Length: 71
Image 1: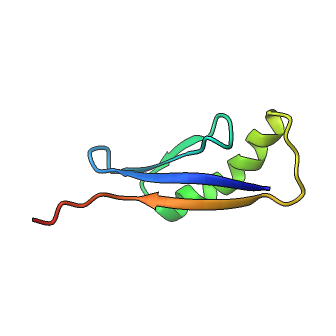
Image 2 (image 1 turned 45 degrees about the vertical axis):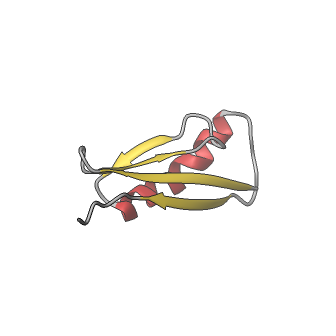
């Protein structure tokens, strides 16, 4: 099964946020993008299991958004 994860940079808080409409309860944050992705990989199967959804293969698709003002 495929699940979409949105990773968004919050410039004010200086953290990345992860959330997903596909995985109930998924909302995480971290100052490091790599750390956040690892945390999502651990939390996603657990949250799906709590929701009663079990799969042998869970595919996570990460979409990153970060805005930068350059001029």
